[in-house]
Amino acid sequence: MIRVAILGAAHPHVAYALDEVAARPDCTLIAAAESDPAMRAQYLRGLGDTPVYDEPAELLHAHEVDVALVAGVYSRRADAVSAALSAGAHVIADKPLCTTLTDLDRIERLASETGRHVSVVFEKRFYPATLAARSLLADGVLGQLALVASTGPHKLNLPSRPDWFLRRETYGGIAGDLPVHDIDLVLALSGAAHGTVSAFTGNARHAEHPHFDDHVAVLLSAGDVTATIDASWLGPQAAAVHGHYRMRLTGSAGTAELDWAYDTLSVETHERPRHQVALPRGRRPAAYFFDAIAAGAEPEITTAQSLLATRVALLAQDSADHGGAQRAW
Image (cartoon, rainbow, N blue to C red; front, top):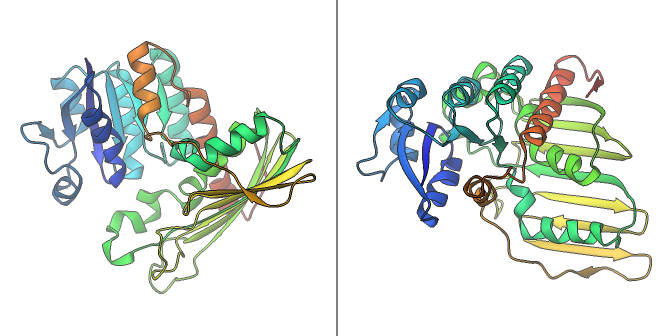
């Protein structure tokens, strides 16, 4: 039986763990930790007799944990991840994994020393349109991938945002948060092990949230692939979806446009005009991780991949903090 604990519950993505435990006979939720009463009430209601602690350290002292899901306040996540690794648990984390490069280095060291897995749930990998697009690339339909362009507007829903979310010291910066999904996909699709990144951030609604940048533009070089990624908290509040997330893949033989919000994949090549591609069934966001742990295998989103995507995103934030200076990775 896989013993699962939640270390921090500041985001709806706590459901990654709760949904897997509910869906799997080989998992049990043994405890949770969250100090904020409002977040406990919002994200941990309905746990029944499952004990809830104020701090991860208390929980880890009281229980043997196989897998810890980390989804707390962003600036606290590194400490929770580190505590879980030191206690011998594997870690599955909501993004961002952490908010500073120093914290990332600490996590990388502990993961190496303990031999535990650290995996960030980059759920866009498992959306139907993504699975279909990766098949097209593998089959050579698009030829050699050259360019990626993605956009990720999100609704801010300002009245419901907690104070910690709107402060840099606890949020960590937009470049380290929103673009990391698409950074991970660029790295996965390109297979690149080195490149450069630069970014610019801004605050278009300064009067509403003076200490919170609400948009970012990233330029990422990943081997032979160049990507432009924009992400924001400027999604129109009247929009039908929380965010109209899209990505365009341009290859030597064709182009594919993924529309995740509306679950479509449009393709056109030198031989065939624009058409819709049939999509496979998607996968639950965290199933890959628990499948691997149950089998004694490395998760599909590996520790190395999770750390690298996080590092590139944090380097993008560092670039933005220094006028868009290019950073090598």
